[in-house]
Structure formats: C-alpha cells, structure tokens
Image 1 (cartoon, helix red, strand yellow):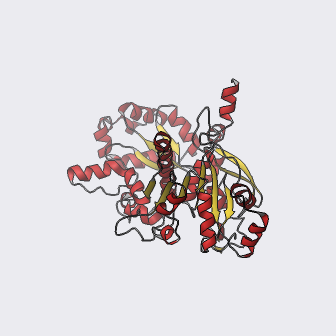
Image 2 (spheres, rainbow, N blue to C red):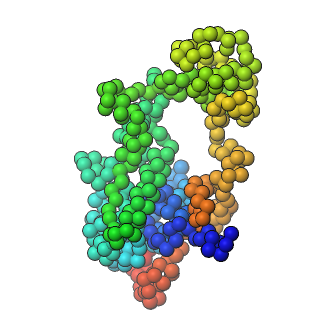
Image 3 (cartoon, rainbow, N blue to C red):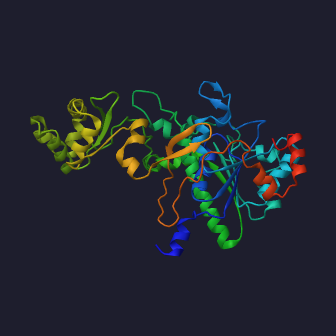
Length: 411
C-alpha cells in the first residue's frame, strides 16, 4: 500500500462533510449513523427539556439514566452531541448558526414542526443557501395523511407490506420490529449521497422529502405490478412460493431451531433427496417436476419437516449446502453474534460505552477497499460536545456560553 492509499484509507468517504442531526427515535438517527460511519461529522442536536425517546424510555417505562439506554446506543454511534433548547428564540438562532457551518440537515419530526420552529428549508436556506435538507416522515410532507402520527407498524401497513406478510388464514403481520424504520433510514442515506453529488456538480443544495411508507411500498414492486397489469390483488401465503416447493421453514431438533429450505430446480431437488438419504418416497415420478412438487407441497412439507426434526439447524445447513441446496438457519440474536462466518467477515464489532460498558453491535455494512465505513466512536452522552460546538464552531465566549446555560438555552 503506497502513501496515498494509506492516507485515503485513514479517511472516510464523507470526510469533511458536516451533518446537523435533528433526528429522534430511529429512522432519522439510523440514517445519520450511517453517514457518520462513512466519515461525516454528525452533530446531534438534543435537549434535556425533551430528550430523544430512545434515551428517555426503556421497555418498562421512563429511564432513570439518560445515558444507559442500549437502544440509543445502537442508532447513534460515531456522533457528537450538543444541547440546544429549540423552544427558546435564542436556541433557534443558535441552531441556525450551527446549520450555517453544515452541508446536510436531517429531521424526522412530524411535517409542520420545523416550520413552526422557524427551521424549515426556506428558513435554513437563508443562512446556508446550498444546504441539503432531508426530512423523513411516515407519509411525506404533502397529502391528506402528512400530519398523521406513524410508527413502524403504521407505515408498513400503508406501504402494503403488512397485507402481504403472514399466513393466508391469519391477520396481516404489521412488522412489529423496527425493520421499516431502518429501511427508511437507509433509503435516506442514498438520497443524501445523491444530493451531495448534485451539489458538487452544480453548487446547489436541495430539499428531500422522504416518505417511509413509500420506501416500504417500493420493496413490493412485483406485487404492485401484478395488480397494475392483471388486477390481481396479492394475498398472504406464509412461507410458500407461487411456484417452488419445498419452500418453507422447518423445525429442527434444538430449542426453537428452524431452517429455511428453498428448492428451485430439478437438480436442487435431487440434491435434497440425496442429502436425505434418497428415501423411497423421493423417487415418486410425480415429484420429478416443479409442478408436481408444488401440487404435493403439503405432503412434502410434512416429510421434509420430519427429516429436519432429527438434526440441529447448523448440521442440517452444512449437509444440505454440500448437496447444492439453498438452506440456512433462522438465526436467533445470540447466533448472529457468535456465528463464525459473521465474526470472520467483520459483520459485528465491539464498542466501549462509558455507562453500558463493552458492547457488541452490528458493524457498518459498506465494505469499500479504499474508504471503508467503520465505527468511529460510541454513542455520545447528552451535551458531550457542547464545548466544541459552541466554543470552537460558533466561537461563543465562555461567559456567553455560561449565560445561555443559566437561561436553559444551551440545555
């Protein structure tokens, strides 16, 4: 590696880019955490008057310690934190001065809130004409639903995914984990990078209106096309496929161990039969074609499930994969953090936190050879970087900072 390559590798792809993060909860902070992993300086604007919900709440209620919430840790790595009380006029003016030093502003408040604060795009362009402002919301900044409240189950429902997720005989699955928030945040990263590219070419910033439900809807394009072209409204069908069988998740012998198996070709079917010891029933000529296997799907599921029940799911994976069959365990959290492949590829990392201690977390997924994404530091304590933000970036005298602290503007 020559000197130039070593210097580039020491930098992130977004080195020199500053992001002011007005995000809260998950979708917005997840976006800015990825920008931070790419090397951007992300300054999270917070206030003790109304802490981020991820700081302030635990699963069993209100947190006693704003620094000890693992949910906040997971979506705010590598950021800085400053405390500005935006409910005050002076606080809003401080926020504008901070934006004037930046390249990107992110917020995921309900549409209209930033305008009420005097911090919407038109106001921020006054202090930074080429600013890029990224607004995330459940339903976007226009339309009759724009001010409706939305958490992950809401916009995955409006996005159409919930209607398609689950078993045919049961109700829709609203994706009660935070996968929809993370997908919306990741889509926002792409939009921010494109806006930066355009600004470098034209010198002009822009406003990005990102709707989480539209992001989710974009994931089911084939299903939408089926309705647009054929007027067929897709239904829930569990783990089955429209054409392939076996195509399901099967119980293995360990506690709550399951393995997914998908057979797409006749060759893969033969591999599955060989892995299972070529049982007599697998020689049935009716199972030699995809259509025949699909017609016998219920019977196949029972037979394959019976075989899987005698094996651990890692053992079954290796055996099936050795015969060319697409099969993988349905990993639990503890498996993800201990699996040899996951650890060797660097998909997890260990980070020290002043309150939580040494924690294992998911590493950035972008593996660029010259400017790799990486975790630059832990999640910040509330107001940890006030001296840097107000003293260095904004050049406020110490006595002015103390006055603003006493007035709970810097708070």
